[in-house]
Every structure is written in C-alpha cells, then in structure tokens.
Image (cartoon, rainbow, N blue to C red; front, top):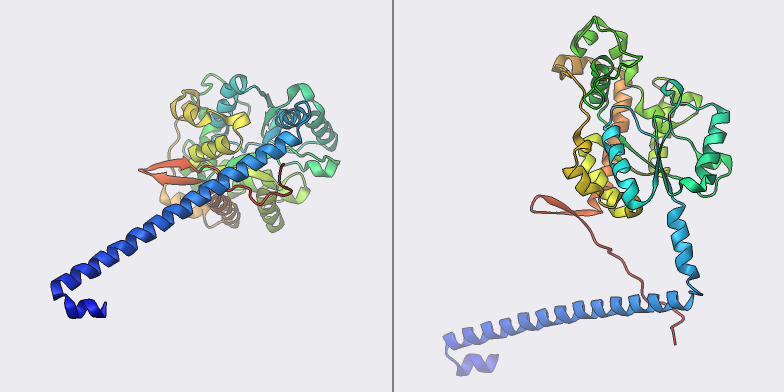
Amino acid sequence: MGLLRIMLPPKLQLLAVLAFGVSVLFLENQIQKLEESRGKLERAIAKHEVREIEQRHTVDGSRSDVILDEDENVVIIYNRVPKTASTSFTNIAYDLCARNKYHVLHINTTKNNPVMSLQDQVRFVKNVTSWKEMKPGFYHGHISFLDFAKFGVKKKPIYINVIRDPIERLVSYYYFLRFGDDYRPGLRRRKQGDKKVKTFDECVAAGGSDCAPEKLWLQIPFFCGHSSECWNVGSRWALEQAKYNLINEYFLVGVTEELEDFIMLLEAALPRFFRGATELYRTGKKSHLRKTTEKKLPTKETIAKLQQSEIWKMENEFYEFALEQFQFVRAHAVREKDGELYILAQNFFYEKIYPKSN
C-alpha cells in the first residue's frame, strides 16, 4: 500500500482501498456461507447416523410398536377452574377427539365438589391408569389437583390448566349463577345466588356473601390439591404449594386472556391430541359460543375495594406467577412476524454419535 501511495494519484488510491474493502467483505460473506453449509452438512450427517442407529436397533418393527404404544397410553387431565373459558377449550377437545382418535371423559363429581374422598381418589387413579379402552384419554372436570405419585403410579398423567384474572373470574361466576349463559340458556342451576341484589357493584357495596373476598379463593386450592390446608382461605402455605405444583406437576398452564396462544402451544407440543386445534379455535363456532348473560363490568371503586383484601393479593400473586411462566414458555416457543405468531421448528440436533455405523 505504501508503494501505491507513491505511484498512484489520490483518487486511484481511494478506489484501490475501496476495492480492497469490498474484496474483504466478499470473502467474509463467502466464509460465512461456507460455515452455514458446513453446519447443514453436519446436521444432515447426524440425522443420517441417527436413522441408521434406529434401523440397527429395530427388530421386526418392534421399536415403532413401542413408540406407538407410548402415544396410545397418554392421558391428559384438565382439572378445569370454573369460569376460566374451560367450556370453550373443552369443546375443542370434543370436536377433535374423533379426528385425532382419542377419548374425552367428563369427571362429574357430586355437587361439583372439587375434593374427592380418599376412596374415590383411589378409584379415580385406578381408572385413569388401568382403563386401557379409554386410552389415549382426555379427562376434564372441576376437581383439584391430585398427586398420582402418592398412589405408587410410575407413569403419571399430563396435567394442563387455564387460569384467569381473579376478579374477572369472580365477576363472571357471579353473573353466571344468576343469569346463566348462552351455551345452555334454558338450564336452571341449583346455586342461583341472591337475585335481590342485581349487579356485582351493588353486591360489593352491600357486603354480600356472593361477592365477598373469600369467594376469590379458588384457583390457589385447585392447584394446591387435596390437603386440608389448601382450602384454608388465605393460607400462605397453600399459595406456595400451588406455585410448586404449577411448575413441577403441570405440563402447561395458560391464561384465559391469551387462550389462543395456549392452544397453539399445545398443538405444537402434543399434536397427538391437539392437531388442528388452533385453526378450529379461530374458525369454529363452539369455541366462541359460551358467554355469560347480563354481565356488567365492575366500577373502579368496586375493584379497588376488593384489591384491599389479603385474599385478592394472594390470588393475584398466583395469577401473575402463572402468567409470567406462561409468557416465558411462549417466548421460547414462538416468533412474531407481521403481527402473527409462528411456532419455532426443531432447534436442536444430535451429533458425534458413537460407535460409528459400518
């Protein structure tokens, strides 16, 4: 370059430097392409080696039979919390069961009691684990979490659930008891509430029992389980146990406010059950059918009064905990493009597989 400065005029020197820079960029681009090609080749070789190993370990199709058996033995339990869009989601499971070849069973407990007797717990665990004719199965009902490991079960069912903003859930339940919904408008329910007080705001102002802060205590015990402390309103132990179960015992917990994303993640992770669920939710009629009748949104004053309660603070803490976990899972599973969410393709592969095949 020193010789160029002496022999060439300044303009030509500048052009030479630019040409050199372009050449360097071109070479770097080519090197990057070569690295990408090498990575693709390594992944292709790794996939080929995996296929060869699978073929080598397959004897008369026995391996594929094992995989099929595993798929056919899957059981999902959706211990649905009332008024969290659970009917809308369950309708999708019913619509898909014939197409995707699995069974759907509703767990109908007496008086909708979410706590089973000890003997019923044993019966239920035995049914779910040994009822081969109902596998693969999707069980749903308003029951609190039940730990199958306590009963000596090795292959536990897959738990999923959906929760909702606690005040919004209570408001929806309040009006549902009084006026029902458009899913079964002619159905009269046993627990119909006090109709003398019409609006939720009036109920809170009057200190009514149907809108008392204690009525917020539901999502925590549903996740906490069948221990007595779970149903002790305001129990800090119950809150922590519910958090523990959500992280360690549940495959996925969504939120009502982002139900479509919850369904999308389930379809990507458990296609054996939920293949076609996202499209069905977006276009199907049943998924959007159930709406509480005559529901009026509470005023800011009503909301502020409920938020003074320690029970609301705990239920809201659990809701925020679940929401954060769901958004974390979603952030690592999807990408946004042009305002739409797309499920990520497989982002790992196997390599350096030994011993090498012949």
